[in-house]
Image 1 (cartoon, one colour):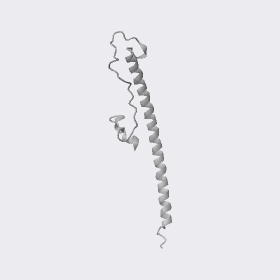
Image 2 (cartoon, rainbow, N blue to C red; image 1 turned 135 degrees about the horizontal axis):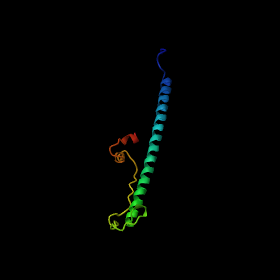
Image 3 (cartoon, helix red, strand yellow; image 1 turned 45 degrees about the vertical axis):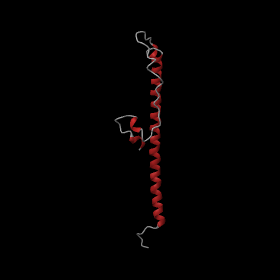
Image 4 (cartoon, helix red, strand yellow; image 1 turned 180 degrees about the vertical axis):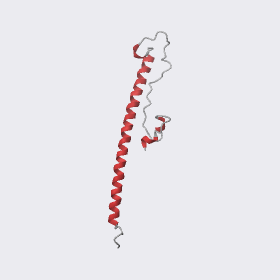
Length: 108
């Protein structure tokens, strides 16, 4: 064996160090993605709640914030159920979150 040759044990130690670095990087990236996902879910939940409140006001035949709507016919026949678009974000539907934005980067 020459002094420039690397032993199997040294190769394994080097590879182990590389894998640990890659693992730590992957964990950090996953944590960022999970935080983004949480933020998106909270935003979607707030938006769907606001939509539901407005729809309920329209069903009652009122304008939002309780103002009387005497000059408009009731819209109760046009709204069948509350709008709640919350869904699990996956690689298949991520592009529907914000069309025109590269949403795939959220999951990569």
